[in-house]
Length: 413
Image (cartoon, rainbow, N blue to C red; front, side):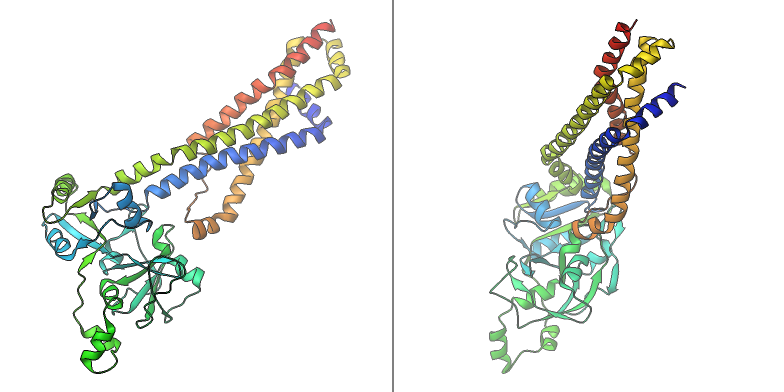
């Protein structure tokens, strides 16, 4: 009877109740959405690179090295000599090496020179390997492999020719138009900076920066791609390289040896540690988003309290009838609290359903356009705590109208 009475009372005021439910549902949608996307983004951020034990670059800060080697943001303080790369690669504790050469771009997308080991050993997420949606890795000097977003946004397909540009701007007046590259592969989407990268071989990077005029004069005519292919092109320096070690136990030993390398100043970082430090720097943004969500929830709860308080003044006749049939004041107090909880629970159901459907519909867009792989498991431990907090806050917000009903019933004795 108690529950049924609360339901009928709410249905009798369905207009104002529906508006309150809508306001609270929106606040719960925002609160849970921010927390869920924050948690998923952190997980996705920390899994940008996986299975790499060390990242090595010229002497610099760990954040700068991480940004330009993994996220393709910023520029290195210096390059690494090729002989240094070979010396460290020869270390028996090193299982595999992925060289990285940056500096050029294509229509705003960074160009990265590397070797085919990149497609074999680089991984992301939970050690997920790169895969090709179309084509294959580069084999020739002027082959290029595109990230998923590069191919999608520029509408490129296999077999097309593209021109690289010097520098990092979207518009460049210095292009390597004497050496067009042919698209031979397109990687599947990863939700990482790999999707925004144009991949070529180290030999391709060297070829586009050669003095073609001097070679033409020496050969007595125009230089063909076959002639360039026949040359033994070896880079003089690279930007950075990633290391996979034979044993995790050797990580700190190898890191110390690289940091103390005598031929040139180097920095070796653990990518997992650097990613955690970088995320901590974004903690202020997390707290701001949580604060905004909390303020929206407070506004909705105040609206609930105002709606319930206004209804008490309209329900004096109902309260009088309940007193006549013997309902004590505490019964009315609990009745108003139960009504507020029912409004809160319905709002939770609407908010959760709306968030689930939104993620289901926008999941592909978030993944392809923003690199966010957001799961559909909304009711995480943190979100369940938030829902309990909402329920508790609802009881507190309804305390004033409940006490008003209690006093009104007490006066009616």
